[in-house]
Length: 360
Image (tube, rainbow, N blue to C red):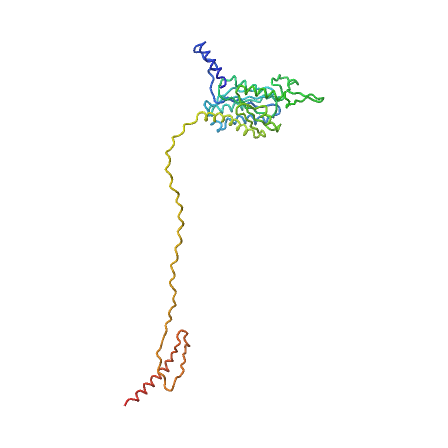
């Protein structure tokens, strides 16, 4: 949307006046996102913290997930990098990143850039410089973003003179002992708000990365005074040691918003619907497990017959009954007593002898 009407008017005028001559604006490169990475290097940031910031931004563009996301965008992104303190300084040129090679070149050049001078915290001056960089670059896009990080609050005039005098402070307070700056006074807050509002009016989104090492309430300061525009957000980090993770998440989110918008504007065609599946038969309840086989029935119990031995009674001996003696003892199964064999033989011979005497 930015510069579209100006581009159309310039192109039409150029063609009418100069025939085949193309205006500089008409030659602009279209990208998905224009991104300014704006980094605080004021005196509150020591050399070790500066090194963590610089390597953090460089490593973002060596992260494969970020590179893959950029490759998925139409024409990639345009990005630049700037340091700032009392004044913006050390700006890199604009880079058109579309693949691994261009991303790695940008990461290398971030690491090669030396630290500029330190100074006070002029966040408003950084926002002003970043907005001008977007409006004057050779790219055109539907989304422009300023990504600003800092561990402090505005404490200077936006247009810093460079003299480090009391007149450069946005809210100086003079005591008998010293001079200090009230950076929560309206005269300081309005410096930042005015530049934030100017960026938003130009269609630019401002996102913030507060580093919570100096002020625990810096996140709310960013929300109230620094960020603005469509989809603006704050990505705080508690220390410089966590800076790498925070800035990777922040840049990923800034780029992913564009990817989501493109996907929503041009959804892929839906695949043809498959024919409806036939109705499923009702579920068959599982069969109960078979019962274990019953043991064979036991045969009917019957008493085992006990053989009974019966001996014919011996003829009574002459002279009356004589008791017999069973040497084995009485049988519990048979009440009949068996006479002793010797005795029965004697009686039988005696009877035979008596019978023979009766013959004539």
